[in-house]
Image (cartoon, rainbow, N blue to C red; front, side, top):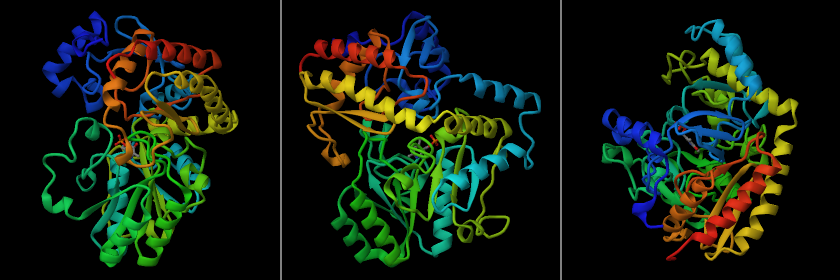
Length: 438
Ligand SMILES: *Cc1c(COP(=O)(O)O)cnc(C)c1O
């Protein structure tokens, strides 16, 4: 299939998307949704339930995007919907403390290593932006360190060689970010302890914090070695810098203690989003009380939000976490991931292009032209996007939806059943047999 033949959505999706493009830049409110990396027209979605999304043409797809991570129970889980409906009738926002906000904070604090206090915001971007401001205030330093291949939202300080959509679109950073801001951010490659050591040797006493994704999952799934994270933790301690673990994807997805629990690493600050909002707009950041008390109104670090701790969003998040606990969710997701590997690995073994399934809990990704899981952005094969675009559209024709970018991961949910995994494996086998010109 040539690029021009790539279709994506049907006639209704195409008509709606034409309307969207007139009134919204690129027709979308978040760039990767526009199918720029794979070609064709996005599906305009009408509804979703369980593991299925339905577009405005009435076509049903088996969904592994899960709204990019939040929907760990699947779409429109009946108990989440019921809790949200009940909450809606009690009002949509109060701008004052409310019970679900306090209960969700207690749940997060009780679950996550080293966390004593948490503050809710409305997106992952806001969470990381606020955590960095807090780290700078706590240390009295300005420099921050991030890793190439990690994405932390679109705050100015972090749009410096970031991952996700930016890598896909070949932009190392964003227009509109002042050079002077970007100069305060150092970008290091993942998986290289020696580079980090040199960075700290040179500037250690000016570094406020290092921010890293719990498991880097925005530029492929770049699972890090425990030794790398331990070295990072030790370097931060030696130089008085704070370690911020960005658990926006991994928090409450890998388990109640996120990547911190998996790796046995306790960060100074952690950021959350996605799963803790149960599909509503939520972020959060937290840490030890001694750090968190620096925030207004107790301390001098200003941070606020009209809809922060919103009762509907808090209710959706709380319902999601309670169901995960009550239904042994994380263990079941691990088992589902094993079942996925059993089905997908034999299919990839026969792929005309070498491909490796990478997974961590219920997060999965296919590394193209790779014989083992890559650990850094620099090690990804430049032919990846071209192959993926073909596989993506061939899967879409078979009514299986992966993310419209080679570097976005897939998500399993408790709504996925073994039959869905069989269907995925069959569709993938068919898709791989159709790829050409590689
Ligand atoms: C999605 C994501 C963010 C940004 O969250 P938004 O809610 O999209 O602002 C930050 N960090 C990581 C690791 C993410 O995956």
